[in-house]
Image (tube, rainbow, N blue to C red; front, side, top):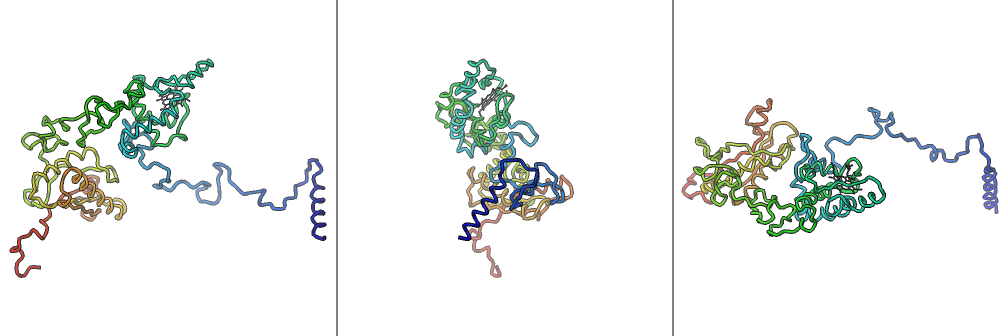
Length: 401
Ligand code: HEC
């Protein structure tokens, strides 16, 4: 009984407060913390951290899970700030090849772009038509116009991300990979001149749809050189020697060296050193080969093919002394490994090769100057003695180890 009368009393007291009038008295607040939460306003200065910022900036070098690590893919700009000229190869690889990427692009285009630009890309999609009927000026661009054919792929990519004038931005709706897929498809549409069916046909059966095939009637030769442009290349390095008769089809050379430039040789005084005559270059801080390195790798391959007596070779990576030793160590190992993989992929027997990394522990030059550091960042090839089993028994003397 007592409990219920307490409840009733409390209710009466509470209701007595609600008299339908405004009051200038401070309200009675039982749990103050729920009403007055301490908080910061946007951009407000705070006293908790020394720098006065209330939001912590991202820690340098960290990448959020959903962020794109490759800045060219993310921003559509190269390191100099120019538009990327063509869809990055990494995007094509992630997309499962060009054909798969184009199909994805077509599908995304039909969802996100066709309403305004139409399925043919001529700019007369439903929204444009409706705007015209209502007398509103809203005409999407004709993407097959010659002017847009010369637009760099990076700019097309950024147009999708950021919009342009009256076209809205699709950054939030279309993730990075799909934006590039759409770019690839728009290219296909342009080549096929608005013929959406023709853009994905493949008359020469080289797995490159007409829209992305520079030579829709000639099959690509897929020899590891310019295999995405759709045109066969009979003389990749354009040195006048057809690939079939060229020992170095990826590096220009002359007939005297069988089509190679003759840069790779055994050192005259120390035959355990393979002289390269050129540097194998990588992207800064990464284990990705620069395109310009392919020629020298091709010569190394040709050298190994022509010299079976060089039974085993050690591929050794070195860095300069900047940065953490552990990072340099792994980087040098990975780079040496990448060279090994390239050679194996291009026909050198894996048993003949081994790779190792030495970080910055074996400098060749002074790490104090930029030129010295440059010389220290290198991949070297050393000839190893043949495996022990092949050493003739007589060679192991009585006092041998
Ligand atoms: C809501 C309608 C609409 C959608 C959807 C749309 N666009 Fe546009 N787009 C426009 C309009 C309108 C223009 C012309 C803008 C202007 O010049 O004022 C335009 C212009 C462009 C241009 C020319 C840019 C330039 O520099 O002149 C490109 C390229 C383009 N769009 C690509 C795309 C792609 C790719 C998609 C799909 C992801 C897309 N658009 C989706 C309306 C749209």
